[in-house]
Amino acid sequence: ADVVAFTPLTERLSPEEVVSLLNELFTVMTELVFRHGGTVDKFVGDCVMAVFGAPTAQADHARRALDCAEDMMRWLSTANPGWEERYGATVQLAIGVHSGEAIVGNIGSERRMEYTAIGDVVNVAARLEAIARPMQILVSSATKEAVGESHEFAEIGERVLSGRQDPVELWEVRS
Image (tube, rainbow, N blue to C red; front, top):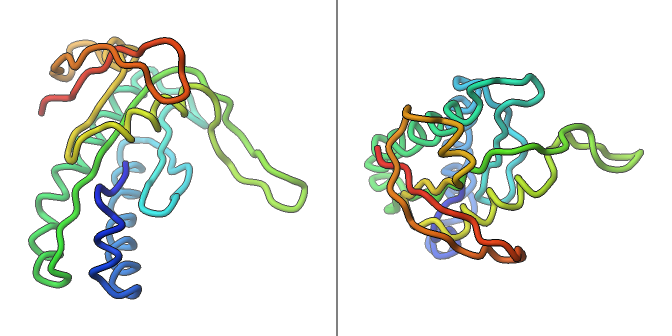
């Protein structure tokens, strides 16, 4: 999940306000990830990356990820009025979800290791998030197929994602 139009927000707010807003956002997003059985992989600037199905396998990992994404969007609708009052700003998210196999574990150097997921599945999810519109949850066909009938989708069509040769069929989650 990525905060949309974060740079203009940082121009308008003081550094302390930006940190306060992000910490509040990330605290709730982390709790939502945990509530749905996910793992927070990392925070990168204004983005949170979560994985489902690791370190413990979950047969319903894709459904958990989409339920979590929908809860994040719902929570924003309750948080934004308070942020508008305190900061004169609201937050919108763009979320991308892809399902598949990744390498998950401690990666880094002898001096600094980090638990993370790497692989094509991570890259595709990041590309989906990058092209998602504000308040949109974009998923791949792999995720759509993995969740079955538990969610409603609208077909977006095939797109060639940045850095990839083969197109990916995209779907928008309908709440």
